[in-house]
Image 1: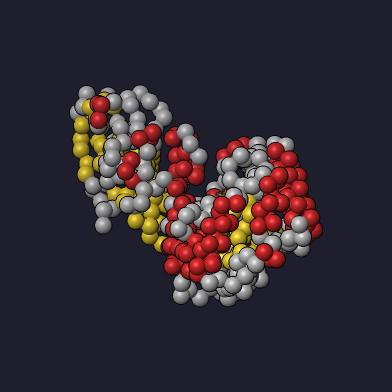
Image 2 (image 1 turned 45 degrees about the vertical axis):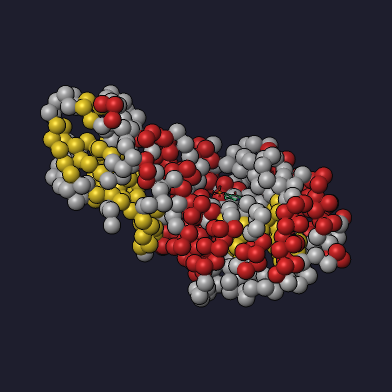
Length: 420
Ligand SMILES: *Cc1c(COP(=O)(O)O)cnc(C)c1O
């Protein structure tokens, strides 16, 4: 194996799950664990079963393909958990899988075969599922779906004005194979506790609840909120809980990032004590590692890498790492001569700056000040060595992005290895 890999800490994942779940339960909610985008780059085949074993009763993915992969990863696993009541289709111990991006043409069969629960918000999505269910001989009311309501993202979701029409399509009296099981929404500014948008969106979501009540359609689950919502003190969870109670529904909250040990830096910057406390409790799950494959002593004046953007101003020792932008190690981590910004890696417990341009498969770092470096030494791209650490937040800052993009950007060819 090329020595570039990520290590996924099962114990850190379980720890974060337990912390967030306790937080949700104190507001009368359960977790729907979001593991889209290959579990935010951590590996669905490792994280899905680990979360299920820890007691997750709902997992969320983006697509039917991801749902099928997850169902296969879970198959045969004896999940020990105290699951919420589910529909009649699955035994209680098997986690439900929400396909948050909905099903596309030709995917209804896979939804049914793998017992996935698609989100719908357009009438045509209901029709496609209905046709698929008819072909597969699904009995009336046996294909659960969740309806997403648009309350302030202008992204997915049915506008409140269109909800009555969707609900009418799903009335049991129509003989539909579909079961209206969940109603949910997604917040645009959850990490900003001062934003009025959270309360506005919750108010709109309450109106959607009212529409369901008027139509005499009662969802078993209501869900809203993400990791940021769990770390907020803005009353959103409380209001969602009241709404769920009024509808006789279970409340779910959908964290993703928090499970993997991070919160958005913005949320911590705006001084919320609850967010700071939660951030302190969470542990990064992923460490990204590689090894020094060669060393080179450069005389002063030598240029390094494509474009010769970095020039040794004195005699330097350079280490070569087998990782590049094809692995998701962004070109933004490059460093030209004289630039303070740019990536760092950890070698022998010390920081070594990236020098020159990150190339597709290779990166050079300056190890002149790190004593004793040898070929074969481990280098941490993300992770901890002794006192020094590099977090996804730090890397995101240099790359001018968010921890989400750093984590889910770790390339598919980087092997994921589970460690305890
Ligand atoms: C990604 C996603 C989440 C999880 O959000 P985090 O910020 O990672 O906690 C929840 N709900 C929906 C609809 C999402 O797309």
